[in-house]
Image (cartoon, rainbow, N blue to C red; front, side, top):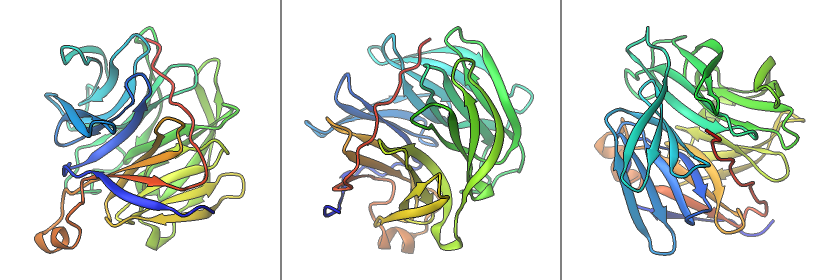
Length: 299
């Protein structure tokens, strides 16, 4: 195992930093601040940050094949044009639930954008239960609901053979697997892969590596864990200097760097004094494994 190095590369303190995705077209890391209502891009070569302010909480962002990004904001799937920072609504969900908002999302291997909803937080990680659902935005902007009764719809990714979708509903404290039909985008046969231990925190964002292992950021656990989904066990733990780790993604020129977002919402003065870089973005190098490039939304 090569020596692991962890550094805070973006020191700006985001309220709920989330949804990191590497944009190879520009060589930048794209991410959101959910309650800060913005989409940001950080350029590692210049260390500059650009941001787009939106009118609603923004749960997730993904690349868009035709340029710019697709975002899940409020309860609307929208396109974000980075050149003029304009936002164009594509489809709406949960119109009968005005207190809901989108949370994490990701594009499947065929270019469909998956994102789930939850009720607005009463305080960090405390929500009205069973209000969320998981949705897919297809390339033609039609929407399919997969299932409901979700508490906090969170991390998701697909196995390397595209036959399994992995999914996290945070308050179940489990990482789940579903059979996946990549031709249609349909899911079935949901089951548990791994249940987090009490000291590991709350499972949040997730990504897969080039060896088919899952990396899960653990909110209030201050770590990312690497799970072998076949064995159903943790095979590696990387601890970070902040508790509120929210999501993770591979990036950099060869996808050998891991970027971990974090949050600072709900922290008191004493906690903030102890972990002043909460809400920043961390880069982990030396993991000895690479990620895979994200797929862009086809619509």
